[in-house]
Image 1 (cartoon, rainbow, N blue to C red):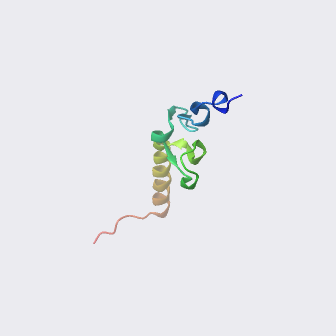
Image 2: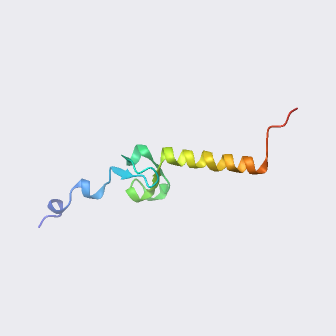
Image 3: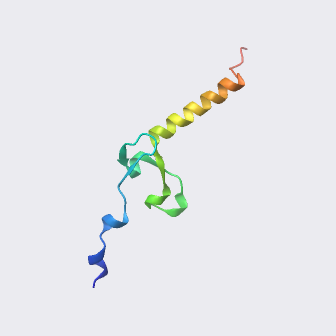
Length: 76
């Protein structure tokens, strides 16, 4: 029994992932951020939230912080 016959490259590498927030299936490398760079290019090193959803989450959280503090640019 040959090892190459049992597995192919598709079993070891994942090319797409479903976003946990929006539910859309996107390309793993282009659509998700690599959050654990020390692990290399394996699928477990990528986030489960797509780039677009991550950007929206960060923008919304920053807007809430700015509004709660009441900070604005100074009027010099």
